[in-house]
Length: 289
Ligand code: UTP
Image 1 (cartoon, rainbow, N blue to C red):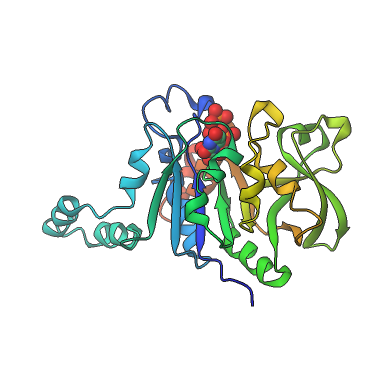
Image 2 (tube, rainbow, N blue to C red):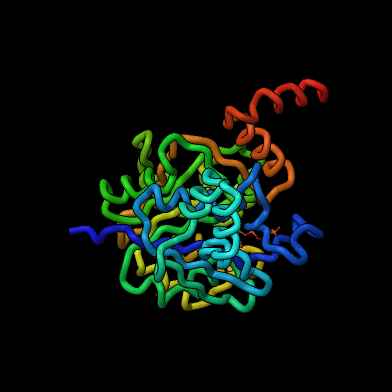
């Protein structure tokens, strides 16, 4: 019997240097796309996949992320008094149930693998999802739900993958394909930010994972990889040959909101999805052709 997938880790301890000075005093994950912060999209996506327990891996200056999911009594009372029922309902829907949010501190941003290792007590012996909130997903079926379904099918580790142009593979974790079955790809190798001419494929890992808890023991060795950081990809590579490991060609689109252009594109794409905003947005966009 497979253990159910109920836990998600969201690493939010990065420095967000590509968004300075915006990220000097506020967390990158609190930057809004249209009218909600990036972290909220990630939490909503995870909830749509049946996730019930959340762990934010935080660092200095990130507490607004935790507060965002609290009940805000004064604000709720004020909305009630002013008859703002729609806003109130939305606010209430967004608060997470008591006891479902845990935070852990990374203290020093030593890389994504280190951030996941910092959540080891939360993870325990359970499978867990990882969502990097700066990868913003636009999918008909929650991307984490797609991974959760693939976990049910394969019984092991699953990472969301997409193809990128060859000349960009050196920015990502890249998979070495064992068998390409279309939607699913079995993986025989993983390499983080390979030189372009040494990349085993152009299938890259995006910020969505379902992993087995055994990865923690490998991350605990604190081996430094690409960029002198503890790389999650290197820890995952140690699972290969011992557990099922698949890439999933997810259905949908990813916006890299850790990057300025990706973030701007996300604003437009998500605004155009909103019927109350789309006509005005189309109209003003026409001015910039
Ligand atoms: P990034 O590679 O985007 O790094 O991290 P960053 O520091 O957030 O941003 P830049 O590159 O300086 O602009 C990807 C994800 O991993 C988390 C980040 O918060 C983000 O969600 N992360 C990264 C950590 O939690 N800890 C780390 O040590 C590194």
